[in-house]
Amino acid sequence: MSQSHSEEMGAGKITTKAYVTGFILALLLTIVSFGMVMSHAFSRTTAMAGLFVAAFAQMVVHLHYFLHLDKSSAQRWNVIALLFTALLLFIFVGGTLWVMYTLNSRMM
Image (cartoon, rainbow, N blue to C red; front, side, top):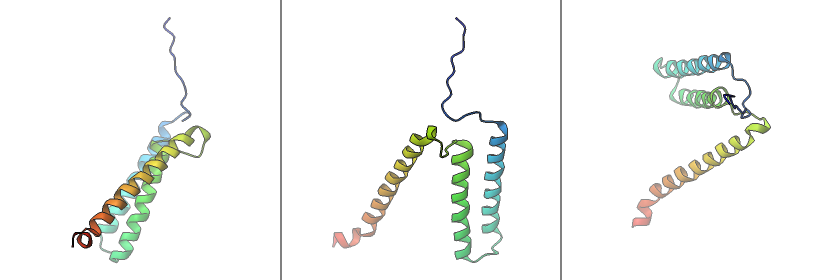
């Protein structure tokens, strides 16, 4: 009667090493971003480009190491849901910016 019922959800065995690796990578990317801005060693354009690259890399690190999203068939629906959410976010934010940008011309 006291049997434990557990079911694998497709993520496989997640080790502490994977979490520590993800944490270290995220910490390094944060330090690089912070240092790039605070050192004033780069031009504004170069710093912005570097921040966008570091932010994208940090998103990939979080998706892979902490949310365990990859190209496996077990994670396919999770990736599709994430992409659909990103599409909706793009539509909502883009639509809002478009409405606010053209508000003056539509009010005259």
